[in-house]
Length: 389
Length: 240
Image (cartoon, rainbow over all chains, first blue to last red; front, side, top):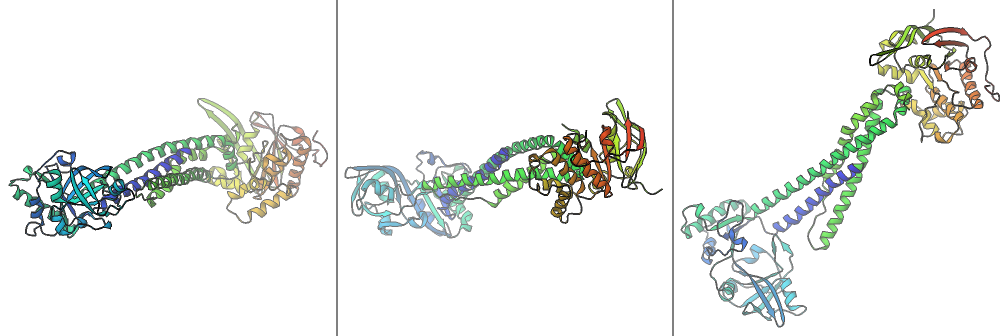
């Protein structure tokens, strides 16, 4: 009985936690649209990340590349393009200092990365194309540097350069692998030229007009860059083109696999529980040999005795299964409460499938492991059973 | 000759255990008519219990024939026998064999659960319990009542399907003499109302409550006589 409770409980819990964790990860990834193409510097394998992700500086991507992708004769279906220069910086205001991530950006940033302005304003298009010393802060950065003070109009130090705060972004939380709240935005040229003194990009993102055109657009992006970099074959590529949908599919398939693997492990523990039930039933048949004999003497047929014991086994496993379902759901619900209290999005999901598993599987185990003891009971001769001491 | 309720011809029973054959019953011939009160008497090990089990359709003979109410039981399968036991036969055992932790009423209803006729189960069970004087014990558990009451519950259970015959295997064996008298009185009353009773015992005194005694010894019948001075159980007397 306990085996069934634990087994079913574990299956339900794992299925539910799996669904919750998946919703957490996918929810964050879906924060990025499925209509985005990412271009990173450096070559990579089919699915592996390019070297730049591991902090190796690759300087092959330039601002002109981004401008080329913007032109419709190169890439049709383009809706927006943003070029990024990313670096870690230390910030300070008066005696407060804080380490954060700098995003030098241009183009249609709000369209591509999303987000809203909480106070102040965002950069104008002209400002984004310039090297003006302006910053827009993520909400965490604003809080860390300014506490309760109004940051708008204040001058802060970004690395060794001074810049004016014109806006603070609304809190977004973790989106994908990116924490948008812990970020400082500046016009691309200011970040590249004044702060870092470099002329290459960290990434380009292209938003296409429709997610259906993404494969075609990815090919055009690659083709355009190959031409610009004088590359003959894809094997020589000094860049990587990825879609966020690929990443999404990858993560979904990994989490799915993990979930089912764990569920199968839990189902195996059900098997152990089933054997426990069989033991209980066998002991019960032995203990109740006299009762079985009596029932047969009073006119119970073999079939009636068989079904009585089979039903008892099923009732045992079914009750165990339902308790397991409740226990698993309860633990899953508690997990959801705890995770939510930590500020993450976490769906509490008890799927119809796991309810089916709980009821169906425990009934099935009752039948499978109850059948042998029940058959043994039904085959007892009434006399042997009555004489049994 | 009219059809007998029970008719045995050259009946034998041999148990085989490994290479060892034990002949328990041999050349058993007798008839029991409807409405008789017969004692089957013999010392322990004589084969009388095996004989009762065969008569009660709990076991099959290994040779000879047994006709119950005109049917040759060799032609019936286990399910037919179960149905016959349910409808036509009531058992009263020495050890009562009641279900523990179950009410008196539910114990009596047990044969009805296996019966094809499931109408008014409660009512019928109450009626037979009343006839054995236990209508005040309906909801007691069987482990809360006395031995004599237990045996009366067992008799009520045997009666509830209105069977043709009642087999009583040492029904007074586990009872004090006062309760034993009550049980014998009920059996004699039932017989007076026309019920066939077959009593298995090793005591002459108890056996003499029947009209006829079949004596069994070493698996054979050594006597089959009418009782000359039949004893009648009267409440208030004792068996010895």
